[in-house]
Image 1 (tube, one colour):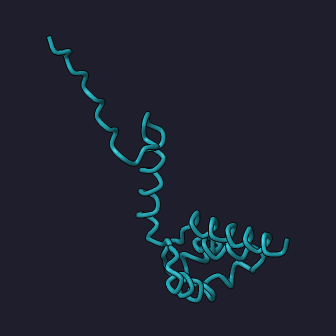
Image 2 (image 1 turned 60 degrees about the vertical axis):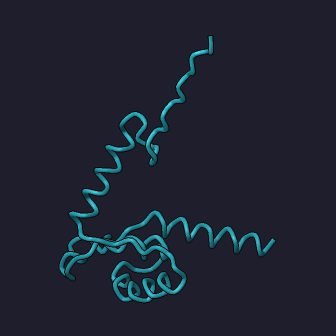
Length: 112
């Protein structure tokens, strides 16, 4: 039973990593945002005080690179436009499909 719990914990951490994204900015930006710009660290370590996120961010990034895990980050403008684009894409009919809709097969006329 212990191995199953460990596996579920790892999968939960992986899901948190995939669903999070850090926003780049100056130390003042991080202070004014309440360090919520460190979303990855906040989701991986929810009990850690927010003023410590910046200290562990580089270590978390190194671990992600070592194990080829995504470490999503970008500017506030880039993150905002990506979010708006995703919301609009998912709001439109057929927007959930990432691939183009395949062409319908054409019916052949019977040979006469």
